Length: 432
Image 1 (cartoon, rainbow, N blue to C red):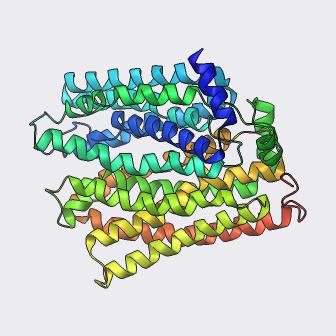
Image 2: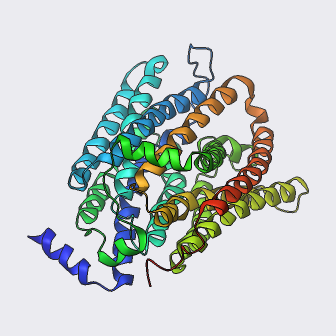
Image 3: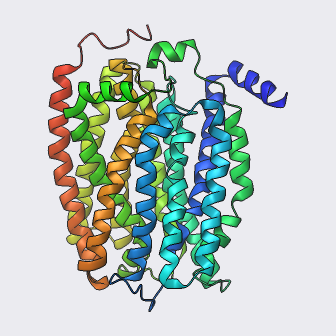
């Protein structure tokens, strides 16, 4: 009865109140998920050997990422087909499995612990699509999705700060730290899921403006690929490059900050990401005010290109000593996350709205995420075998330049393809 009453109130609520509620619920849920995924990256695991010919920490990160990547590939089918009524139960089940894997990670011998991070990554890869399903297909989806994406920007640094503090301040063993960090976030996670469950589906005005969002089958997915394969391929390659850069900056943050002189300052993770989150949230969340789907779509592609230019500017400024190491990490973070989040909030959302394909946002995001994380797994192998620890910062600088340059080329190509295919009359017809 309480669920029905809350849902009915949300159906009648002012758009600002409705949006604030949805953002709070999504932010809380996904923020807490990161407490089960990222804290181990704040540990150094110094002098521990994998026994498999790879540096230990890169092997742990690669193992979890492989599980996460496989989850994304499975999610292309699973998330796009899952009925809405099963989302909340599935969210709780997935986190429980991930947390159990962290408990075993602390218990088994270190040379086998990487297997448990692989298991940990398998369920966590599904969480984003489940949360996103509550937000897509609405006239304010960009604002809602930006709030969701703000969670993985802020949470990554925050939960690593919590994990680092458990080790440095409270003396928690590095192998137990990930489990202990996750335990601190169970109650807010459950509250976030409960709040999500109350959100009503898109109303008639939302459906008219953004196209219906329904579970889709294999035929629907193949039809979308056949129609947009060239443009989608370019966009997915851009997303893959951004995922690689974001992943290296995120998962090797302890090493990068250490090389920049911040090794004993756990709070730097949260401080830097808070600044990045505020900028990214403002720029991407504002896209919902553009009612013209065609204009919004191409503006989002320009946003991706702008992010690449920000990365270039940050690298040049750092190499010429125009900004500090802290400024460099923040600027590159903004340049990476602005386009990365634009894919989640606007690029695919408005693409569906323009072409009116039978599809949903979860399908496009999991298609991009699957190949994005596959590329990141490959980069982890390179980092673990060919990049010495004392050269990681230099490698990161060159990676940033390469990603930014390739992004500019690919986004220009995809824009030219879509300009030829998007009908000129697609504008405000769905909302007028």
